[in-house]
Length: 145
Image: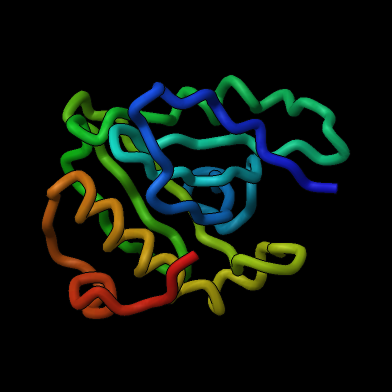
């Protein structure tokens, strides 16, 4: 039923980590579009969700949030399962992690905090960005996918 429109990878690029989630509407906890965060050896990609294989109106917008890991300057955990990624060009992407299995409903974000922490840790490690955050993210806690 749910599929992700994953972008093509370069021949020498490999996927390191993935996390299901959604792009929130501003500062609210509500979803604008479901997405799969894909951390590769070179980039941070966002693959839009497709329900029953149908393209979403938001697909180009979700894909445009992707960035080269060399451009990541900050990865910060936020409230609930939200994390914020900032690039050296001033672009900011908010992403809310959801549970790796099940329907991934918005109100389950409280249960997804360990997945947010692991996502923050993995992106920081891959982009070599450090910063203050939750102790679990800094210490490498949380769960992996």
